[in-house]
Length: 510
Image (cartoon, rainbow, N blue to C red; front, side, top):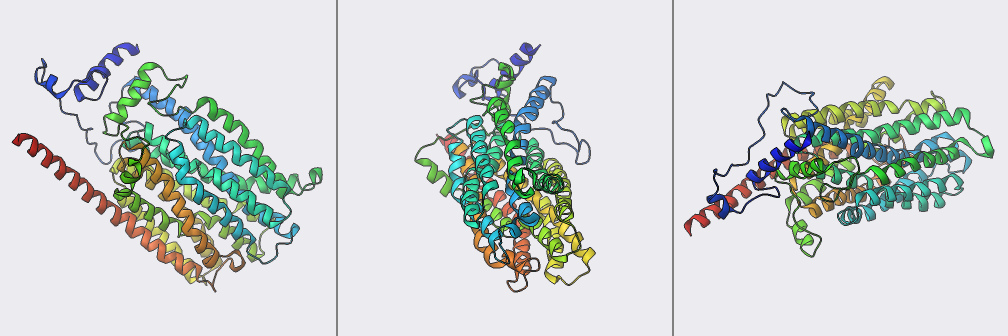
């Protein structure tokens, strides 16, 4: 059944000059049939087909290939990111569930410093992790990093001082830094441009679910495990998180498919492996470049490294990724809620995050543009931060805007998909930028969080002017991603077309 389809796609690839049977330009002049120009994907009506999972006219065999990728590649990616955010959030849930009282932390900034040391690990690890993944097989590298940070999470159950937490949080951040950019890079190796935003959104949504589950798990442990085995419930949280991560790492070792060029996945047949390579080549994103000394030049002279790093840094400075933590501290400061409620209520932010990530991914894929989507989400986020800056508003309104701040999460899959699209087939440049922008985002947020959002000033941060400063960065993020990056991309495309036209004119003159 797959053989005729294989011949059909091989012939089509040869006509496009991208497959194994492709001819040189000299051969094409004498071919029996004229050379065929690469066909552009048909433009679809804006309204029809909004909820289709595949491109129109996708063959049954290719749909089966995409299904396998979604089942194995996407499922592990989501599980990995779920565990990452579960392990990133557990310190906050433990902190408000008895840890600060048991260890005598008092009114200091211990929680902020735990975040800072975690970000320091991320800062060091992310760029190098995503260069390593271009050399080491992803199915070894990513599950290996997951296993490593999980052991450091387990170690936190026995901590009795803040400095012990600082050391283990740094190690967690160092290895966790491979997860987000590494998986985003791998998704960019397999999926088309029109498929990327939705898959990237589902991947990042799994992290939101991890944040939510951490709250639910801590609430359940507080009710059922307090004092079991002579351990406080917050200590049990780290043990349970470790136990959940082990089967996910094992699953990744066996089922993650690597890249189309190197895959040995048992669930893909030979036609599917070839078609996976062709799908990317048809979009002009076939792997180019290699790991050598030219990497530095290719990266330093690209507009993408500066544009997307600035965008991610601005996103980090909105403190969006910590808004659930600040909401938790706000609820605790009101003295209106029980410990399980303080852990459970902020998970509503995750529900909003889920909605905006999925819907923004669909809209971006269908529009083929990410700028307008970033502009719309930024406008809503600006409204939320205006209310938080005012602060003296009714409790119900404050609760509502804290929850609506969950729309911030849509930016990460949008920016990651944008990088995968804009960098084409340069594997090293694409990998480095995904890691580097994560690293810089973590670097800029370290002093910002310490001086603008120290946990001792929670939840209104009046003395440090936390919310007003974050509002300024929200406005900058909205303008940069909604207008700045699209303008740069159009300029780059026009420049590339002029260069291509000049080369053709020069060739004709000879």
